Length: 331
Image 1 (cartoon, rainbow, N blue to C red):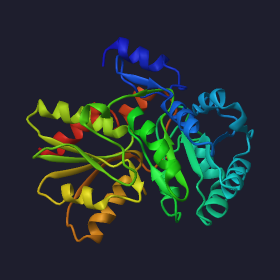
Image 2 (image 1 turned 120 degrees about the horizontal axis):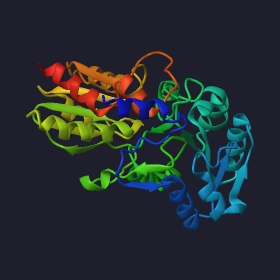
Image 3 (image 1 turned 120 degrees about the vertical axis):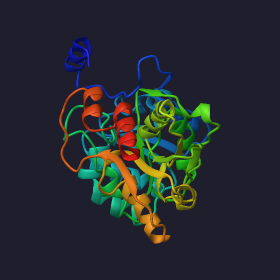
């Protein structure tokens, strides 16, 4: 690391909530624009937020459809309770807040008001995993673990702007509640280069490879693809399987790649406890697939505050760290 790089990392604001690389193609507020476009076609769609419209890109919807937007204030339980009531009368609500508040503060309202009656309420959780440097109060590193055990709840962890834009209408059309781990602001555009289409409940093989299989979700699919290109320089051929729907999980597609003599690595922007790694491992055990699976994930601890590039490097989510880990496993 050069001294200039070190200085830049130290002075970068902890507010950063973008994981885009310098010069990378991005799309601004893909969720907000997708929801506004969907509302043009479907009069049932409404948007709610808990004082976080600007920070969950819901403000785009609010500007386009002001009479179908509801600002609930800093009251996440009220946010989900109101969304449940709207769904009861036939509306299709999208309710946005930070992922930590949906998972930690309003869990019981989501469980009993929305999931138990299987209502079509779509929860949009901003700042999932390590997408902010604010520290444990805002880092939703365990949200999937909290929500995986909730019956009826669909969980989606999108990679990029393509995933988000295509997921929104499918979430609205699906029965029952959904939880979307929102990537906001200037979101990278990655998957359009891989002949990919988001399908709710389905995983997709983005590239083949004879030596290693990456199974990834969320922003870590972007990192998996980057690491695969880097590993090719070391003559390591890497397949990448993107699993944006964590629940219900597409075990058939994933296990078809896992059940081989290749090194299998899961990559997720979530604690190693209760997320993609354990989902894949559980599916393998249930299917009788005897396979060692190596996780790239956040540690089971409260994380530090700071700038995202520094934190991603420290906790192993950076592309360089992924490449190092794979080469170490193959050595």
